[in-house]
Length: 156
Ligand code: HEM
Image (cartoon, rainbow, N blue to C red; front, side):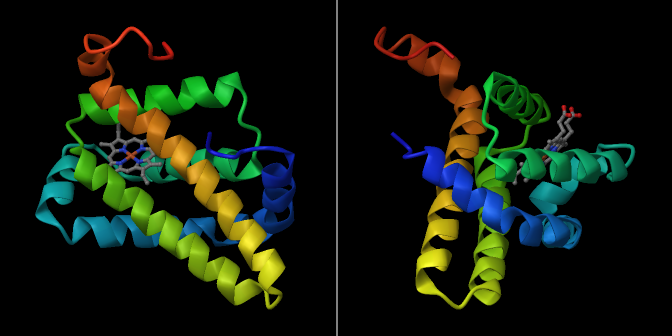
């Protein structure tokens, strides 16, 4: 449904080196941005240190942008969603986080390429995989509720 296929993987493979090199700075900027808001700062201040979070955050983006979206990736995305749920990261904060990363990646792609075909392929690929990650991580929050509503859902 998200349109993730071999073209998505090929588009990601071609853009990934440019994105990977920028990830450390984007990740730093993400924490600086979120810490401006007391609701997010409250969550971060309960952690002994942000260093390991930054590293894990970065490696998660790397695996997402590699396009190797296998079962190991999916299990990890669900576990990450659960960790955020358990830490009380409200969905709007989580979505704001994805918004931050996705906008940074969009700007980077737009600044890196001049051919519109290439820009379009890279941006659609990024949008597709970010949507997948948002779905896996945030649907953890609501899964228990919607299980009672329907028996037609795929049980992830
Ligand atoms: C762009 C969206 C986000 C992604 C992809 C992401 C990614 C991650 C990853 C990969 C981990 C490590 C999980 C583990 O290894 O178990 C983590 C942990 C954590 N993140 Fe995020 N994060 C995002 C947004 C946020 C936001 C907005 C907050 C808070 C305002 C937040 C707070 C935390 C906390 C508190 C942990 C520690 C969880 C634990 O160890 O129990 N994250 N995040």
